[in-house]
Each structure stands twice: as C-alpha cells, then as structure tokens.
Length: 256
Length: 286
Image (cartoon, rainbow over all chains, first blue to last red):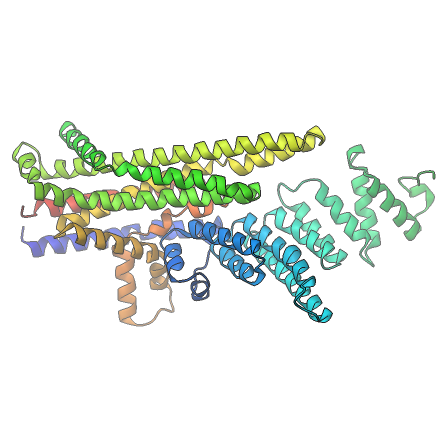
C-alpha cells in the first residue's frame, strides 16, 4: 500500500472513531454533571492565584494533587499567622476541589474563628474601630466560604450545620442559624442533635416563638432520649411566654 | 498466535524490569509514607483527604509517566539493537510482535498500579488503626454510643470503596496512554519524537472535553475555529473522562453507570489505537 493511501486511511479511521465515540463522550459528560462530578472551574483568575505551573498541573489531571500541596502551604501560612495569604490559598484550594467538604469547612473555620480573633487582637493596629472592622470582614469571609461550599454541595448536612453554628456564634443571628440548622436536619445523614439546635435557635428568634414551641414540643414527644434539660427549660419558658393553658402544657416546671 | 504474543510480552516485561523501572516505587512509597508522618499534625479529616489526594495523584502521575516513557523506548530500542529483525525473521507476524510488546507494557503497568495501590492501602489502614486506637483512649470517658459514632466517623473517613474504582480508572488511563504512545512510535523517527508527541497528546487530551464543548456549542462562530476544535475533539482522546480520582478523593460516589461507561470508552480507545498501530507498523519499512 502506498504511504499516502495508508495515511489517508489512518486519519479517516481516527476521525470516524472520533465521530463514533462522540455520543458516548457526550453522555458521559451529562452523567458527570448529573452526579456532580468534574465541577471545578479552571479559569484565568485561578491561574493568577496558583501560578502557571500549578495551573498546568491542574489542567493535566492533577487537580487533587495541586489542591493538597496548596493546602499544606496554607497550613504553613497559618503557622506564620499570614491570614491574607491563607485566605488566597483557601480560595485556590476550594476552586480546585469544590466537592471536598473538609476544605470548605476548615477554610471557613480558619477565617471566621482564627483570623477574625487575630484581627480583633492585632497589636499592630491601634484603632479599635479598624480592628473590629477587620474582624467582621473575616467573619464574612468565613461565611462566604460556607455559602459557596453549600452551593457546590447542596445535599451535605455538615456545611449547613457549620453555617448555623457560625451565624449563632459569630453573627448573633438566631433566626438565620435556626434556618441553617433546619435545612441541615433535613439533609440525609444529619445527626439527631441538629434538629434540637434548630429549635434552640428558633426559641431565641423574635417573632417565631410559636414555631419554636411547636418544634420543641415535637422533639419532646419523640421520647425520653430527646428530653434534654435545655429542651424542657425552653418549653417551660415558651409556655409561660405564649401563655399556653396549663392543661396543654407538656412539662411542668421542676420544683425549685 | 497467543503463545507467540505471550512470549514477546514476557520478554518485553523482563527487559523493562531490567531497566529498573520499579525504582520509582521507592519514591512513591517515600512520598506516601513520609507524607503520612507529616500529615499527622493535621486533623484526621484533613489528613485522610490529603493522603488520598497525594497518593492517588502520585499514582496517576507515575503510571502516566511510566506508560509513555516505557512504551516510547520499545520499538526504537529493538530497531537499534536489531532484535526486531531476529524476531520478525521467525514465523512471527508484525501484529503479534506489536501486541506482545504492548501486552508486556500493560503487564508492567498493572503490577505498578497494584504495588502503588498496596502501599497506599497499607498506609491508609495503618493510619486509620492508629487514629482509632488513640481515639479509643482519648474518648474513653464518652458514653458508648457517642464513642462508637466517633470511631465510625474515623473509619468512614479513612476507608472508601470508591478508591478501588479510582485505581482501576488510573490503570485503564495508563493502558490507553501506552496504546497511544505505541501508535505514535510506529511512525515516529526517534524516541524523543515519540515522547514529546505523546506528552503533547496527553496535555491536549486533557483539554479535549473543553474543545468538544465549544465545538458543539451553537454560538461558536468562525469556520477556522470550528474546524480546529473539531479536529482536536475527533482526533485526541478525552483524558478528562478518566480523571475520576479528583472527585473520588473528596468522598463523591461514582455511579456504576459512569464507571462502566468510562471503562468501555477506555477499551474503545485502546482497541482503536492498537489497530492503527498494527496497520502502520505492518507497512513500516524496517
């Protein structure tokens, strides 16, 4: 066979095979999207953050490996209390591995707890106002990580639960925390205490006392295992606050 | 035919082993074991996440490198040593020779992935047991139900059955790369050309899915752009489809349908590249 004929056949075979496999590749793409796989977006912004070499490695199928090394780098930044650098590295890691709950969870925790406290107690910043502002900014950064994590992993209870804790402890937002805990409790695999956390926060949310009472009552009726001292205390307080008739009250106040 | 192919495969395997290619396993073991000590300072979730990231990532790197570099040297070396003439002078067809060579590389890659997987599994098991042991001591005061829940969480974070599927996909990707490199080496003029072209195909292959998406998108304009995207999409393999480990390490479950479709796609690529390699090699002037 003449080389020209051979190569024409080879190229034609490659193109035909390309056309033949197109439906399978497209269906695999769709299946990946449906299953939430390959969701990472490797864009120009990420390239600027992680550098050309890491970006090339991530593009070449070593996304998780690059993420792990950047996480170790972020840990080193933490040991040096370089909060700004840590935040940048966390952005890169979570962009590379958006399905990893550990990365979202710990990135938000580092920002909202460690970095915010460091900012509040920054001895190099004499202005109280600026220290408080920096603290608030780190709180918001922590919350943003959780919100983006939730957007990427909507069915995972853990990130909703962490958001509830953050809104409760860092934003003093019991209503928001109650909603986050309620959403967490509805997700598969959520531990039973999450629904109690939702009810506790709802009890502190002004205007939603009746809803809180109904939730706590439902929890109380689940059985002895759910009748925690705090559940009983809150029920008693809400019954008094809502003026629930004595006959309808669930748990009588304990004798002093 | 099978006996002759198997004999060539065995000889190829011996040649590659004599090249001490398995020395990379020492680097892999050092990387995984060394990292496991270093990672012990992190929380157990972080530790397991990074251990899986690094181990599976390194398995992917090493198997891909091995597939390309080991295959690229086969034909040029046999031609240079003139071994190929001795073999083909016997009643061995060129296709049998090529299949034998490729089978030898497949065997090498299988053993390499198995050994790396075994090192990774051993480190993972050891770290899980160590953490379980220390958790049992540290949390001894907890009520039994809470202690069990904590231990179960450590076990679930450490062991994930999808990791096995990840290992299989890494192996199929390495086989695919070996078949592709073999195809390139049948028309290449030197080992360097084969290696560089195979690596270029490797990088382009990881962008093939993006090229295909733009090619098929209705709003992509320009004949030239569309033609280039079409050529990339049709000629190069979609290697991103084999990067399931990036998601597996995060604990994502891989549906059985995706797993089997990926293997089917891999088998298709291997069959076509091997057939094309055989066709080109059949007409190659030696």
